[in-house]
Image (cartoon, rainbow, N blue to C red; front, side, top):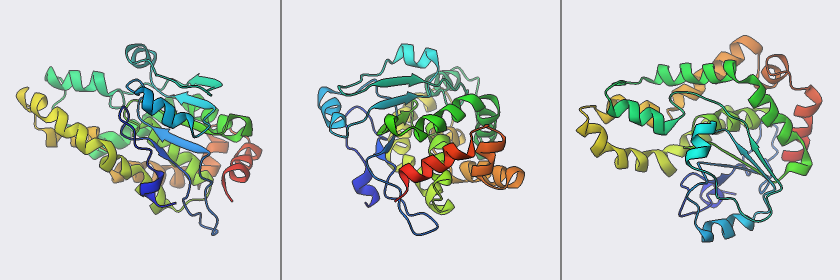
Length: 256
């Protein structure tokens, strides 16, 4: 599967795609039709819902906070058997609140290093949520599974990186997958926000890292994990306390 084929074209979500088709370092491939990532599902049209129903998705994981999900409740479709909230709160990741603070002049600049720091913070403050995510992916009864947040780039990006690394996908490919959000969502979102942000006297370029998926931010996170734990697999075991057998089950279920 090429990456264009992996994209699910929807009217109400910009960043929905199949995580399958990626090659692993040992020459295998991540299964298609098993794991999907997305931005928020609150604006799905009936046609979108019908399209997503064709993928047989059983489980939805929502990384948004209670405030985010209450403001923009997901529009689910037939066939969903489990809808799991795994709330991960972060200033940058909660895009609506973040943009409001920019408009009020409370935030005037965000660096790539700031985004990296927020990613480290999310993993250190919400290990149980990311551990639960991996354990849910390990259960074959939950597949096909879709996970998402608001923009589908930060919390979803971290989760996607964790599971792809566990599957043995090349690091460059993991980073490419993360950056695909820029093509699918971030640039359009920046263009939408530019007039009101600049009307507030803030340069959109000064906050671009927070509104996009800067490759260096995820690379910094993964480098930090490698330096301190040796690999994402070992990090999941030692820091997230996921059983090695669960991670091996993910590999067995998702890699062919």
